Image 1 (cartoon, rainbow, N blue to C red):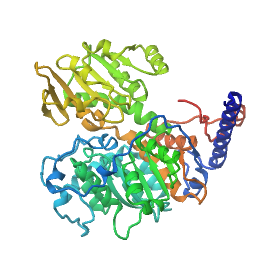
Image 2: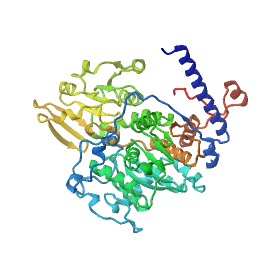
Image 3: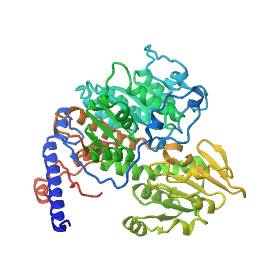
Image 4: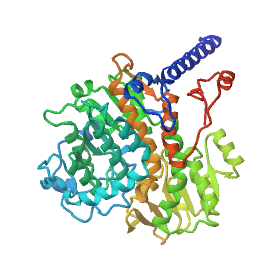
Length: 550
């Protein structure tokens, strides 16, 4: 039998060690200032940024896609053109393409069936139509206006080229905002090859604009599943080009390289991952002792969690519902499943417009927060017959089941704001007795034999990222964090990072936040020496311990 007292002492000792490491990070980082007039030195950044490894227990095993499915021979042309319903989890969460000038239905031919050349004479890319590059450039210029912090980082570090020699292979959503990140990496000295982490998220004109500048992009809106894996393979498998850094969103690129190109994977100097699914996969590899590359967990950074989840969803939930259904929120009976950061953001927005919002929760702490915020906590079965709109925000599977969908009233709306497309049991709706009727892009009527219709949005995928847009400012925060993480991993001296998963130090989160404060003309109060001593803090931060919950 284990000794409980001994386990407690071990936990206290481990916590003390992490606090001490965080304090060391603060001391190293104190040479840097985050004031508006300060200049940033990339050498100081690299020496200062020493992240603390995290060892999160993996409570739920994330299953990789079956190798047989992934690595089968490439399909026929007909097979490529049909959109598969069995796309992997991470690749079905999509950033918006709603603002795109183009649609996958404009041209039925697959980009793989034609050869295109940009103005520089290069054909090392595969996009829908390279002639749309001018439209994409305009989209990117608009995005740059609200990503001033990332542009500022680009200008400060451009002369030093901290990513000179870096060969980055990326798998993210290809939108105007991520294009600003990609072009920032290129400006800092990196060579990039890029593909999309989602078959529906690519803005075709933006992909064309990037290809026109020389970035090897393999992506278009409306890929089949086989196209998806083909594009990843083209990014990785290029003669004479050995990638040494990975920027991933969902873990599909990392997994593909790990399984199919193990020798290439072993030469990678660092992985930066920004999604829940991708981070779980990395922790799974680490726990099994199979992670041979240091990795940075950007998903759990404070700025990513708060701004990408809470504040982003607070705005984009309304946008997604309005664009797809034109629904009136006032007086509607709405159920939000899950009261985490995403759920909190959704509920705040819906409540402000007069909706009657109820919550479902498994966590008593989150449930109590919902009660204190004025929401009723219910079981879905208790209200399923009266509800007008259901929004899932849990990251779990089968949160809304077929039995519950059968009992919903005519005209109800069902959508998902959680991480993956598994929250609503959409597969159970694809049966002979039910009729699917496409209303418009990403909006379907599912019709029961008695004539009842349920409105399903984005086929259960992320509503805000499939049907509307995400605030550019929020993506600027995430992109700045990704850029800094890549700089750190690439420039870190040998031995600083082991073959493990690391979390960004609190000081780096604070630095990313400070870069964005100038947008609001915000002025931070500075601690006096006496105040800093009283609080036991460094005047330049970090200002909160690692265990602090914002």
